[in-house]
Amino acid sequence: MSKGIKINFTLLIIISIISITGCVSADSVDTNGNISKAVVKLNPTDGNSAKGVVWFTKVVGGVKVEGHIEGLPIGAHGFHIHQFGDCSATNGKSAGGHFNPGGGEHGSPMSESRHVGDLGNITADSSGSATFSFVDEIISFSGKRSILSRGVIIHEVADDLTSQPTGAAGSRLACGVVGIAKN
Image (cartoon, rainbow, N blue to C red; front, side, top):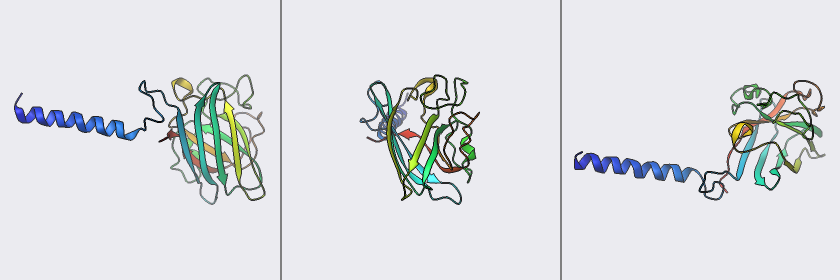
């Protein structure tokens, strides 16, 4: 191998390492590649004003889910992880159905059998804001239950937690894609 090719190859490797390590913070990914925190920025679907941020943090016993959403109609709204990390459709339907790798029935977060994406409801106050925090024992950052690169949807009305396959939660008010958090 000529000296020029060796230098170019070495430079390519160095640039690749810098690119890879610069994309993920050491705060949310450990040296074994285990992810400890993810985030989704929710944007309104066409004709709606719901928007906000949801954080997912690995904790003992599961994943802590905490967020703040604004621009919601007063009351309860279905809150789900959806199959695809695709919010390209103006109505949010490109995110597909509920994330359900195990083929379970739709249910509440406390149901013995449920979709991985069944996170229940969030409730907007009189100002149209919902602030929430809970731990889910089913969702994960790895394996078949990984929520990374999946869609998150806030629905128009409350999830009744029983109707199949989606809980009769109505249209999609906001959509976002889960990604690895910076810190």
